Length: 80
Image 1 (cartoon, rainbow, N blue to C red):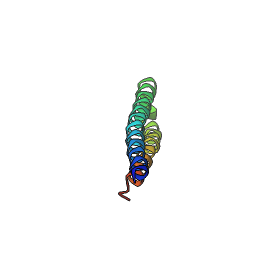
Image 2: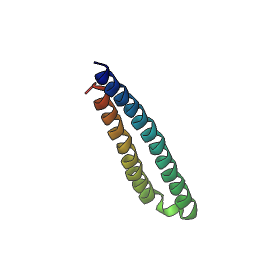
Image 3: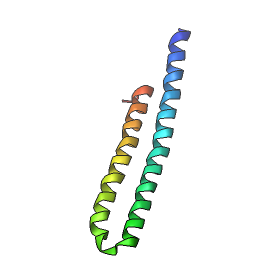
Image 4: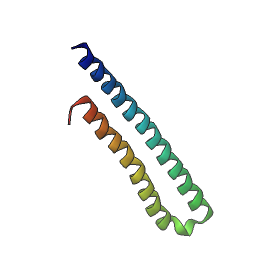
């Protein structure tokens, strides 16, 4: 019976690491994308509309990785 509890403990640890690291990395990715957008628009203001579209695409892809980690952590804990 103790063996099952150990596996569950490791699953909870893995879930916490997955969501913690993914949240931090997603925030870092969105921050870098925002920095790139601000630099591009400050150099060439006429491309603001097109650059914003690319920014949204990059931010969405970065956020999707965080959502995948959330789903994986919920699977490890047993919620889903």
